[in-house]
Length: 173
View 1 (cartoon, rainbow, N blue to C red):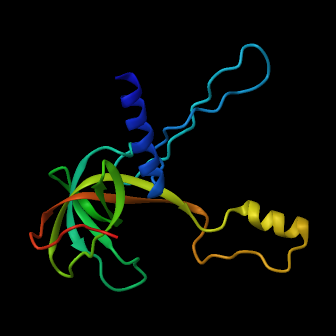
View 2: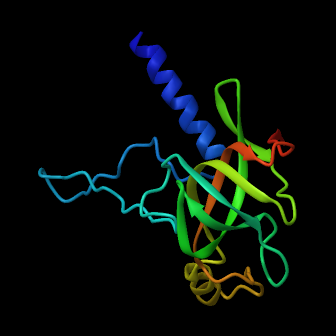
């Protein structure tokens, strides 16, 4: 029984990694420096809905339109039934469970329709890290990767359940 549970945890962890979720199932790094080495716990980045990522939440809002807004951005005005003072733009991604694994899903938010989604907040680093520019200078590279996005943490929401609109569904990619 013990081995079955362990395999299940490893499979779920691998599935999360497959869709770029920063939920770690790996060992924590260990500080070196002698016989009293301690486990170092990495600091978890926060989201914009709360300081905790991965918490099951219900969000409500309308798709953001116009301007320089990433496709699939929802203007979230309600979180877990609580109306926000000001709507928060949040990129929405979908996920479905396939053979006990979380897989990316297609989710096309409709225009001008209220959406109610259940899922969790996660995030990723976007842009080009400063280390790449430093390496390019040090190594004399003729070309260095560039990005229009600044190197930063970007939260997003993984929708697992669509409550509204009724005709909107998650489809495996």
